[in-house]
Every structure is written in structure tokens, then in C-alpha cells.
Length: 291
Image (cartoon, rainbow, N blue to C red):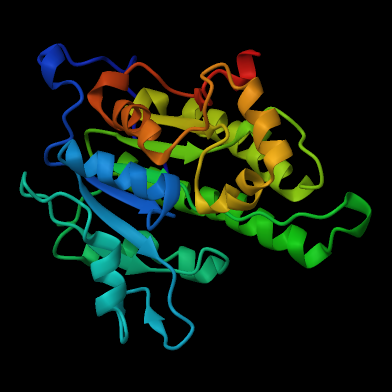
């Protein structure tokens, strides 16, 4: 695919009043990892701002999903649970498609499946890559299959979905938004999580690389790096009284974050308010990295 001729500069629109800069009315988002935790918080926030959301769900093991149509033989309850908390008061039309983020072939069909959905109406404006996994072990004992799985889900899938989004955004006027999710491990090395740290460091660099290519086409590519957030992924860490106290004492804000703390950052990066912000990694950590 050859890139369309780039304008001499990507201009901020001056016809939008400041009170409307954060509105996402009429916008369409695709999100991974949005059925729980931070991802769900992001989906709810985008919908509250007016966006319609298409959530990428993992097929259940009991039956097969058709990623090309987004249908699933045992999907009604799964869809209901995934979409029930998303507001529809502004005419938002939410839907789901199915893909296994560990399966590249499945991931490659996400945009095609989404664009065929009646709710999506052939246009996507925002991609949010939240889905990810972690495997923990000392480096000398870290299994190759665990390494491959983490890198595939946390990096390759982000790349494949971003590539699909880029092709779609560059094929039409108006550009688009890609918001990836990094981590404190985008900046720090961590302990006993070599694959996760490597993948999140690479997500930060991928974000910058895509921003460099697409910024003049009004496509903003940014990332959010969460700090210590109270979700089921960190439940064991929170239940360790010593580690929980050590972490809490280091966070200047004095508390762990919650999924709701991402409402402002995600709406900002998805909206016209961030039209001149690209290639950035926005740390949402209560001040941890500044300590």
C-alpha cells in the first residue's frame, strides 16, 4: 500500500470550541482487553464521551468463532456481559468481534470483521490496544514457549492491529487515533518478567515509530503506561501485606490506581483535544516514576 500524499503539516482544527474538544460523539472505537480491569474502564469512558465501541473478545473454548463475521455459537451471554455497562444514551451502537490475541491469523481478521458489522457502519476512528498477558519466572528458567506467547500477544498483536488501523486511517480523510498500552516496565526492567518487560519496552518504541510515519496524515499514535493499579491481575500482589505496603509507601498519591483513573487519559488521547499530541507515552502512576 502506498501512502497518500501527506499535507505539509497536520493542523489542529480551530472550529471546535474548547468545551467540545473531548466529545467523541459519532466516533467508533475498537478495543482489545476491554472486558475487565483497565480495558473495561477505558471502554466505559469512551462510551460516556459518546463513542461506539467494538470489543474484541476471545472465543470460548467450547465452540468456534467466525472472526470474519464476528458471530459465535455460544456468544449471547458473553456479548451481554461485555456490553452491558456501556452507555447508549447518545445513540452509541456497541458490538463485539471475536479473535484470539495469541493467534496471528485470527488477529489479522479483526478490522475486516469489525467493518462488516452493522453497528460499525464501515468506519473506525480509534484503536485501543489494552489486551496483554504476563508470565513470571527467573530468566535462566524462563521457557521459550512462555517468551513466544508473551511477545506474540503483547507486541506482535499490537503491531498487527495497528497496521490494520493505519491502513484504514490512511485510506480516508480525517486520520485516526491509536492508543497502545505500555507499563512501568516500558521504562524499568522489573524482576523475573523478562518477556513482559521486553514486550512493553518495544510497545513504547513501536508507538514512536508509527507516530513518526503517520503524524502528517492526522493519525496520532500514543501510549498509556499504567502504574500499580488495583485489578484482578495485581490481586496476589495486593494480598501480600509487605509488598502492598512497600508499593503504597512509594506512590506519592498514597494509593493504588483504579480503572476509573484512566477515564480522563483515554478520552483525552482519543479526542480532538490531543490533536497535537503524538508519539507520547502518558504515565498514569500516581507519581511513581517521579519518585
